[in-house]
Length: 288
Image (cartoon, rainbow, N blue to C red):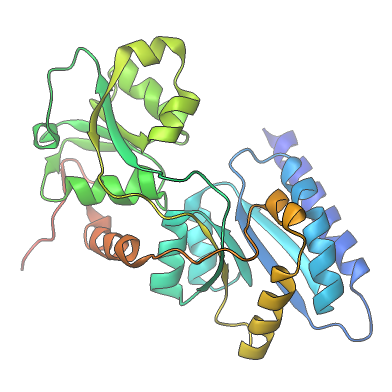
């Protein structure tokens, strides 16, 4: 583990050096930091963004620094500090950035369409309604996830649970439910299909499907970037060849999705965020 982390630091430092060197012209326009979540933590993310970073550095005359984080928690910290100039944000993180840190969406991300949040239980579990999770242990994803954290908590609002377990990965969450460590777990349907093994597929069933489709993620730009410069960066990114833009996961001329409902969900969940580590967990706003 120590070796892997050191390798990451070396690769990220190398990337920063390479991009900065490409843009070290006398007309340098400072630095642009790009935030992205990289769950795997490997070198692939550097190669994935290399062409885009070179293009952005050349056009903006700025030093481009890629700053991957390994989970949504760290990403939220960076957003609250407005430390990222550009963010390639999945839906839950995008809603947080827009609602709390005044980031502005400029392009939709390429992603799974019709994404929905679900609760799964063991097939032999007699529970057939979310209200029957009262007093039970439930597994959720990491804070910041739309399908694994915000929407599930919104749907569980009003209940008291024995405990909430936060799974580091969707695969771990499914294992916890199969093994009986948690009675139910929240995940997306796409993640269930991707991460469930043949064994867990036969052992699990869907307890509840949220009726709302999750909007695609978006590229966001920080309010700390000067307005005219925001518009120029938007223009530059819209002219990036579509095939290359797909490599980093955005649609240059796509329509910005509606985030009103997701923002409402985030704000509702914010009211109970301080309760989530308690045992039992009261998922409602306490009155004084």
